[in-house]
Amino acid sequence: MANSEFTFIAITPDGVQQGLVGDIIKRFEQKGFHLVGLKFMRASENFLKEHHIDLKDRPFYASLVKYMHSGPVVAMVWEGLNVVKTGRVMLGETNPVDSKPGTIREDFCIQVGRNIIHGSDSVESAEKEIGLWFLPEELVNYKSSAQDWIYEGQEGRPQNFPALPRFSSKG
Ligand code: IDP
Ligand code: MG
Image (cartoon, rainbow, N blue to C red; front, top):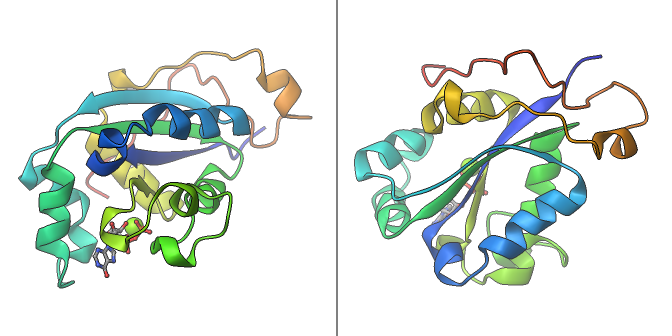
């Protein structure tokens, strides 16, 4: 019993404005991932600069932060076997034009600068991002009865920890 994984997913202001919140959450639910954190908020520019700090030298960094701050986002933590990698597959490529049919970015958007969703790109970034966006008490630990039908054994299954692991934003 081990290796359950967590990822940070955020529906960005363009996704919220286009009424895609329900459709996007539904895909993660239907896939069988386990929702452990969700909030609706407008993040400050300083907070978003920190969230996207790895991109600080890219020419689009300032406009990315402005766009992310332009409205509310839906911030979520999802748990499950390989959820980081599978989450990225479900999102599609960074540029919607390169995304495969059936992915969120292929189905719902057109331009790279308005690609409606963020998803952690590695387990390490997921831990950092969850620690940045969520307080430990905002992550909810509960057993979903569906897990008995989604997983054949214990491997990768949400663990219903006595306490969820602590995520640190300080890497
Ligand atoms: P990702 O979201 O697929 O992980 P990153 O390279 O981490 O892609 O970039 C973060 C976000 O920055 C992208 O989702 C997109 O919204 C924006 N972005 C990335 N590349 C460009 C670009 O060339 N022009 C404008 N925006 C970009
Ligand atoms: Mg990224």
